Image 1 (tube, rainbow, N blue to C red):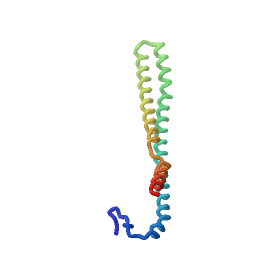
Image 2 (cartoon, helix red, strand yellow):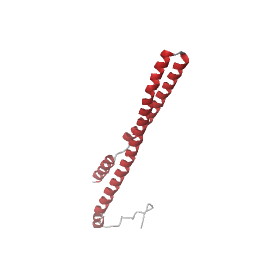
Image 3 (cartoon, rainbow, N blue to C red):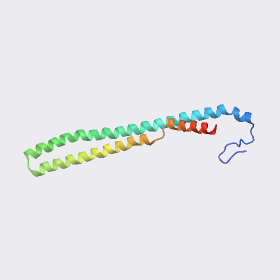
Image 4 (cartoon, rainbow, N blue to C red):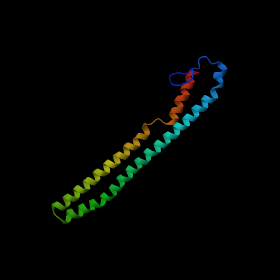
Length: 133
C-alpha cells in the first residue's frame, strides 16, 4: 500500500526490516546533502561572478569619469560658463552611473549571506535525528 506521496506504508514492517533499511536511508540522505551542496555552490558562484561583473562595470565607468573631471577643470578655467557647466553635468551623470552599478553589485553580493548553507542544513538534520533518539 502506498501513501498519497508515493511512499510505501511501513507501519506493518518488522523492527528488523526497518533497522535493515537504515544504511540505505543514511546513504540516500548523504547523497541528497551532497547534491544540495553542489547546487548551493553553483548558485553562489554564479551570484558572486555577476556581482563582481557589476563592480568591474562600476570601476570602468569611474575610471573614465576621471578624464571628464579633468576636462571640467580645464574648461572651467579657460572658458566661460557653458563649457564647464556641460563638463560638470557629464561628470555628475558618470558618477551617478557608477553609483548605480556599484549598488547593483552590492545587492548581488548581499544575496550570498542570506542563503542557508549546506552546513546549516546538515546541522539541522543532525539536530532532528538527535531529537528523535
